[in-house]
Amino acid sequence: MKKKDISVSVQIYGTGSELPGEMKELMDKAKEAGEKAYAPYSGFQVGAAVLLGNGEIITGSNQENAAYPSGLCAERVAVFYAKAKYPNVPLKQLAVIAIKEGEVVETPAAPCGACRQVLIEYEDKQGAPLSVLLAGKNETIKIERSSDLLPLSFGSKELE
Ligand code: THU
Image 1 (cartoon, helix red, strand yellow):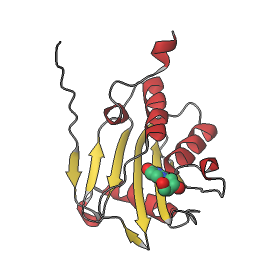
Image 2 (cartoon, helix red, strand yellow):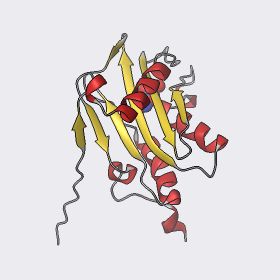
Image 3 (cartoon, rainbow, N blue to C red):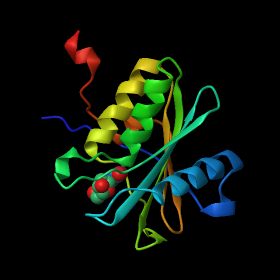
């Protein structure tokens, strides 16, 4: 038996004005989107904003449903809309923020497994990193590439 360590490094920034300009703009848009989330069942409002290769920013928020699994996370709402609108434009950076009882959550919310799978699909296809920013009340985590969020992943290469 051999052992292999898989490690990921992330960058930690502050919040608000402590974030570099472009990142702050993206996170502000994610927050605006999160405030409009439809999350009556969980009360957990999530906003996402994705910066595209053409400079446009597309936002999304979580959309819940009385039949729970019919809802969708903020990340996929934003990314699917971006790819539906601009199928050939790469996704550069995704910002995610969660709000509970009107306050940004303490610990940055990270995308669920299904959202990670969706992010790596597009990152893999575009052959360029899709970085991810996760905001908490006092810190912002930057992950350089979406594949760092899902080691040992399954992808289109397995189907070749
Ligand atoms: N949710 C997101 O939109 N994104 C995440 O990264 C985590 C979870 C949503 C799904 C559901 O509407 C609510 O948050 C609680 O899980």
